[in-house]
Amino acid sequence: MAESSSKFDRPSSPSSSSSSSGEVSVAVEKDSDENGSKTGDEGAAVDNRASVGGLVGITDSSGTPAMELTRVNTLPPEILTSEKPQSPSHHLKLERSKTETPTHSSGFAQAAAKIFDNKISEQQKLKLLKRIATVKDDGTVEFEIPGDVEPRVLGTGFESVHSAVEDEPLDATELQYIPPIQIVMLIVGTRGDVQPFIAIGKRLQDFGHRVRLATHANFKEFVLTAGLEFYPLGGDPKILAGYMVKNKGFLPSGPSEIPTQRAQLKDIIYSLLSPCKEPDMDTGVPFKADAIIANPPAYGHTHVAEALKIPIHIFFTMPWTPTSEFPHPLSRVKQPAGYRLSYQIVDSLIWLGIRDMINDVRKKKLKLRPVTYLSGSQGSESDIPHGYIWSPHLVPKPKDWGPKIDVVGFCFLDLASGYEPPEVLVNWLKAGPKPIYIGFGSLPVQEPEKMTETIVKALEITGQRGIINKGWGGLGNMAEPKDSVYLLDNCPHDWLFLQCAAVVHHGGAGTTAAGLKAACPTTVVPFFGDQPFWGERVHARGVGPPPIPVDEFSLDKLVDAINFMLDPKVKEQAVELAKAMENEDGVTGAVKAFFKHLPRKKPDPEQLPKRSSVFSIKSCFGFS
Image 1 (cartoon, rainbow, N blue to C red):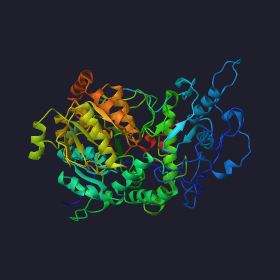
Image 2: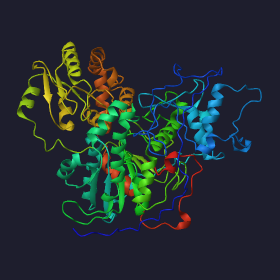
Image 3: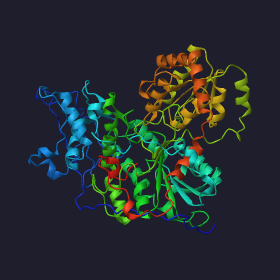
Image 4: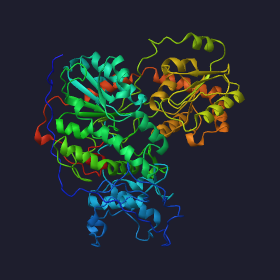
């Protein structure tokens, strides 16, 4: 296949702001409580076991891990030591009665509001982050929000770029009139993360476009078998999954893990450019991407798009765009007042862990100027279109998400149609009532024998048959075989779950979608990342019990969960949701969303988006 040229002009990319002093300092501070005493080793407000750093661990300017931190101070060194008072004109003047006495809650409200205020400096905003957020030793971020703070108190005072406006209907996009282009997908994660993009890629091919899916080498056969072009990315998903299970997907639990994890992320970040422009590694066929589709863990995707001056569209299976309707899945925020703020905090912490690698790639590979913390913005946070891969019947599109954000529906890859189950499995299924499925896919289990024993006992107590998916976790080692338990290797969920009475799994978006589509009551046992989010949504929808965190997995809780799922009312709710999802076509929705936001001609320089007045860590880093 000869290299094809783009059928539309690539848009110009505004140059990034530059600075030679972009290093960010990380310092430890122990805050005083209301009485002025320090909260330290035994203080509830500070956890000295927490180790700070994105997905890879925060380092100092020399690359040395900065461990055993209680708080993150993101200020440049000169600001940390400065005693210069701030001008009153830089402070947000919240409306307050003259007779009102300042309280802890009003102080928090002021600090949080300033995060979004364009009247104070970016450095001051950064200083506020350390006052609000606490990094916990389980790898999540917690806010110490007073209970009487109301969401309205944390308002920005002006309209957000994500404020709801009338969207262009996805059906308005006429796909057949889009000229053929070359599209590269940059996807990082497990098989469940890759699978929806295979479905999207296949549909794009159906419309005449050339699609290259760049992901981990482990999934080469999976991609090629589906009929897509493959290009390898760095990183090993087994190592990544093991780390994220242990650290809840966010922070390392000890210094020994930081070098390994940083090496994984470095491999990924440094491998993103080649898939966009290098010939096929097997056939030698030239390739030059006209557009990029990526998921957020492919850190550096927007920087590659900037260098190549091509459009990018972010798709993901978990919320990554700030909203006031629910918190960032990697945060511990119970009060609605902190929901939107949680996205800004998480973004800033991730950036601290990868900023040195991103800037190294920008300088050495992409030939771009480095971006500093809260500089180098390439437009507002609404400039990069995002598509979210879940059913709007499960989680409707938040009202404060704007027109460049779409909830497209779950994207299913039809694996059942060509699947022929082994005869022994078919006979086992016919021999009794529908079983309970229990499996955790590609996630490693710390004590597989103990967990298997717990599962088998729970099935016996509830009088149920069960299918145990051995997966990467090594489940299924039993002292003696049992007729009521079937040990399963690989099997398409879209076929298997139709044979089951209920399902118990880790809560990955794809597995959750497959279970709900099959009208299965669902118990989520979250390990990390977005899995607690999906467990909570399943429970809120009435189709499953409260999620059971893997660290709290026990016989009693599993028995209660199975009994909950066997309730006929829960099954009715599951059937109702499945019927609502029946007419959704997330794959077509994703393709339409992609082309809806794709520029067709080079924009007039005078019409290029202006910098947003809304404080956005996400936009400043080219983050998704």
